[in-house]
Length: 193
Image (tube, rainbow, N blue to C red; front, side, top):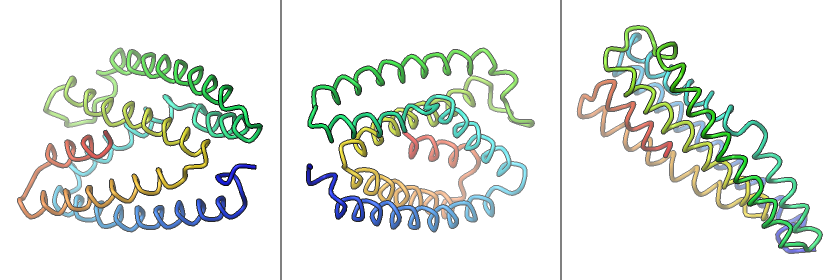
C-alpha cells in the first residue's frame, strides 16, 4: 500500500481539509458582511446572484465527474496501476471539457433570461463574468479532485487558504477605496479563476 493511502495520510488529509474549510468559512463570513455593507441591498443582491449563477455553472459542469475522478484514480493507484489512473484521468478530462463547452453554449443561449433584475451594464458582461467564475472554477475543482485521487489533499487545503486570504485582502482594499458593484464582481471572478 502506498504511503499516500495509509490511514495516517487519510487522517492528515482530513485535518488539512477541515482546517482550511473553517478558515474559508470564517473569511467568507467577513467578506460577505463587508460587501453587503458597502453595496446595500440592491447591488448586493445582484452580486449574490452572480455568485449563485457561477455556483450553478460549477455544479452543472462538474455533474459528478469530480467524485468519479477521486474514486477511480485512487482505486487505480491502490491497485498499483498508474497507467490506468492516467487513462482514467484523460478519459474524464475529455468529458469534463465537452460538458464545459455544452454548459457555455447553453449559458450563452439563455443569457437574456439569466440577467438579474436591474443589471444595467450589459448582458454580455454579466454572462462573461458568470462563465469565467463558474466554468473555470469547475475545471480547477476537477484537477483538485484528481490531486485527491492521488492522495494529495494538501493541494486543495493550500489553494483554499491562499484564495480565501487573497479574497479577504482584496475585499478590504476595495472597501477602503469605496468600490462599487463592478469592483466586487471582478474580484470574485479573479479569485474564482
